[in-house]
Image (tube, rainbow, N blue to C red; front, side, top):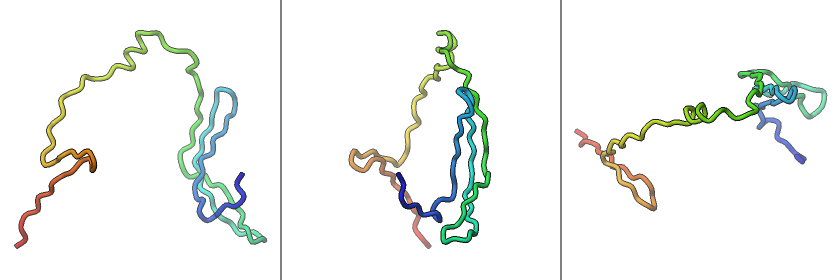
Length: 103
């Protein structure tokens, strides 16, 4: 339960609406403060970003050959050695920066 809310600090909202058991609607909105007759301003939602209609179609797992093909990853290539970088267990990655002499 929210008792107090700073309206000036809220500027964006994501609205998710379930239209049916298989449809979901996403909207990105901005909150605009409008004048009202009271101390509390009136808030208005203005659509600013992408909106999506999503339909859930996958309700059963794929067959095993398709699943293996989708989850296959490439062979790990050996990493290229990083120059001027040391690893420290306390500080993590430490790098040396070489700056030429100023003239």
